[in-house]
Image 1 (cartoon, rainbow, N blue to C red):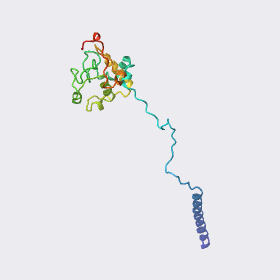
Image 2 (spheres, rainbow, N blue to C red):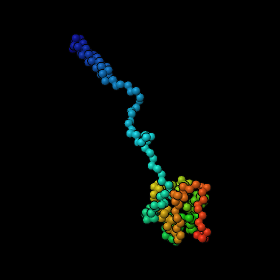
Image 3 (cartoon, helix red, strand yellow):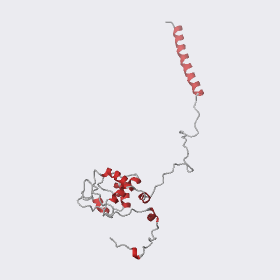
Image 4 (cartoon, helix red, strand yellow):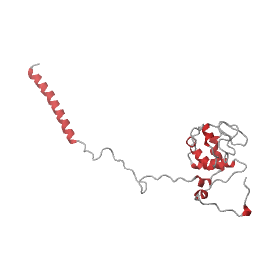
Length: 201
């Protein structure tokens, strides 16, 4: 192979490289993307109302739900608790204390059950409102409780099960009402006529 042929090959290779390089520059100029005014991508979100954000559903006070609470539906919800609790009078404790007569009962007072120190130290009485607070999130309501149940997030379920627990008594008490809850603290209920007074139990 003589020098002329070598020069031809070298020229062809060099020409190809120059052509490739030139095409790359030209294509960059032709297809160069426009610089964005703001970095990132704009995501269109439809406005939900005047404020532009979806409104949180209004919470209904538990006292309002007590007015329409169902003992039957509460008994169905209570099936979640039957593995650990008895609901029949005199049935005694299981993994947890028996729940017959729990509404109005002193906290940590069921006979035959060893309560955690946290529950013993909680004190008070199981009123419908206290039960609602506890059943929402037991571990938050009584930190250190041995109860492993995560709670009932639906307020309707809590209203129903509290109505059911309230029925498990020889003397069920009326559940609190929204009217009583709305009354200012300083207001006193109207006194009953003297002839209608009932002896205290």
